[in-house]
Amino acid sequence: MATSPLWRKTLSQWKAQVSMWIRRLHEMMLQMCDIFFDFRPVFGELELGHELRRFVTDAAAGNRAFLYQMFEVQADHRAAIGVFGRLLTERDDTEHRGHINLKYGGTLPLAEAVRLLALRHRIPETNTLVRIRRLLELGVLQRDEADYLENAWAFLTGLLLRQQVRDVRAGRKPGNFVDPKQLTGRELERLREYFRTINDFRARVKADLTGRLLG
Image (cartoon, rainbow, N blue to C red; front, side):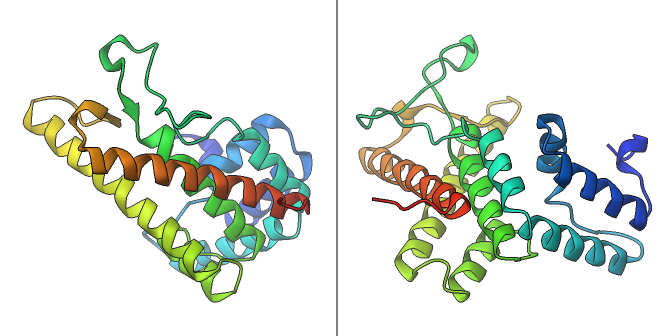
């Protein structure tokens, strides 16, 4: 990305670019925001990055229509669990058929929903756990809700890390797929529980962005 002119801009150019992305609400623009919005300054004049982060946060928070459209672009990013509690596994990828994609069916839909709610409430942090704690501090989340989300994140990232260690030891490229047959009964139970938690939370975020009531 750093070699592409699209991602190399001055502070004023970035502010203009972000303003255009948020204003136009075009699907491609929204996808650009999805890529860009978790940036962090790591080298050079870091205050420029912090200023841009504040600008992005304020611009997004002030445009609920934009945040809702961001949610709609990600609407199919749901946790990998069916209506009747069946874990949804890979069908098309022959190498991983019958396995669960823990990133796209777990951590990603949770991180995206937390990010949108954090932007809605002008939280500039980019770390998912920090965002959850800030939402708790602001009273946006209740204690039990925040605890559930933190536990879900810790459990899913723990499973993912364990699987990637196994992949490396087996001489495979570390990936995001976990074979449910290698999980214990308790782990499968917790996985279903946390996947339901994620989908319920995504519904709660959608309601927050649209002003609809949950019943």
